[in-house]
Amino acid sequence: MKIAKELKDTNVCEYLLYMWQLEDTLRAYDCDADRLRDEYVARFDLSEADRRAEEQWMADLCRMMREEGRTESGHLFMNQGTLLLLTDLHLELLKSPKQPFYSAAYYKALPFIVELRARSGHGEETPELENCFEALYGVMLLRLQQKTISKETKEAVTHISHLLALLADAWRKEQEGELEL
Image (cartoon, rainbow, N blue to C red; front, side, top):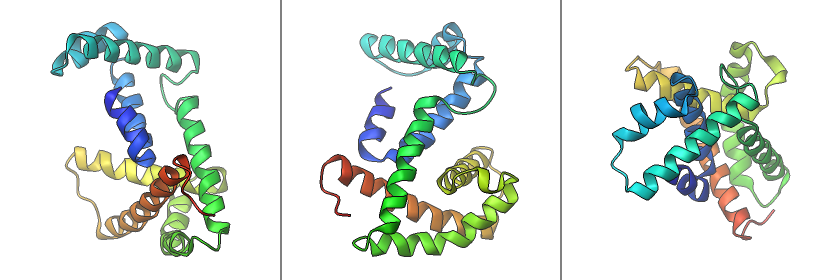
């Protein structure tokens, strides 16, 4: 919970990836709050108050996943909502003449996004930003599994990461009332 809150305040894109990873962690424990408490949270060196807060937060997330039918796959509505807000900001940044660096980063990443969309089999159904997050999440999983990542994938991730870094910075500025569009 503490990590998620810090990431949401500092880098919303990293926050979203963290939340996707947490969803998968909760699934690995069958969304069982007792197992999460005993087998996962217990491994961390937390104060008693922080441990209780973390356990409650994970229990609440498990409940939400069950209620939303996300115990097998998919993302919580709150995470989908964050992605929709990011998509709205992304579109505003692309339209803004005051954001040429964002547009330039987008057009550098676009060929890779198009290729990802073609490979995903989802076609136009999946928003571009979701494809970007899926690519970064997939590479993160490959790294965790110590699998080889192709040169082409590394190049795509470099451009997509740069785009999302600019988006996260714009989000932060917007939250602070400093974004000029």
